[in-house]
Figure 1 (tube, rainbow, N blue to C red):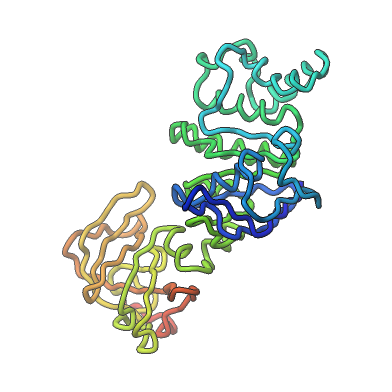
Figure 2: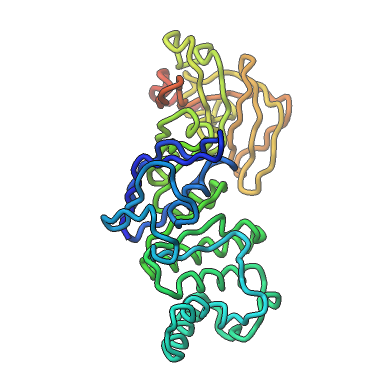
Length: 352
């Protein structure tokens, strides 16, 4: 299903949950709605589903306006955060529910449910009740039930929120592979950046009811278009007076900046790739992150964070190190610019 949304607005009393939202989604894409809690993501999802009606604006499916169509006439499958399975029904009957409502024949129901049980990895669990399943299995049943009537659009509201971390990672991979096989247009709401980056073909960043940016995970991560996106996606530190640091001169005197840990290099003189652009700093703390170290370092009164490989020598609080900031995001109220360190030239020779 191809989706077009034009100037969508929705208010609840004096609270405006959606502000002039416009976007297009190509058929078969897996889209993540990412943003902080209360930002308006679920409201957009519910308007697409027909569970809320927009105050103004148009929702268009395959060229036809659907604003006033009820949910059952929109060709949508909806998966809720809490599964919403029927407790007294078996796995088979839960998946078959929508087909029963549509008065499909017993053979049609059996064929379709059997197909979905295979697709979702639920074979041998058909007769179990929801309370006899794990959280991951219950969520798979919810997916299968939503897919049973062969919807053109699948909507997922924080589908992995109620599942423990290990199973959540497994389900992300499973969901992406399943959606690729089925080829259905899918939109899922999440506040988990890692989840959105790992699963989605494209991400829409929603904040305070507005669409901040839409793009692929790489585009969103590498080229944030607004100060909010630059600060929200990834880990970041906000800095004032960036002109005090090497390579970011006087022309930036009044600007604010965002620095991510992966933009910062910390180490000894022989480890820094562009020593001429580096500052001396002092290690405040070091945190073990499993795959690397996160180094908390102070440079000219500025506190920065950097990642350091497990293969490199361990740093300790109080160590004097060299700190190289490769790039920053410079921003005002309207835009964000990526600025490279102007002093980076050929690497300094290492004397052995």
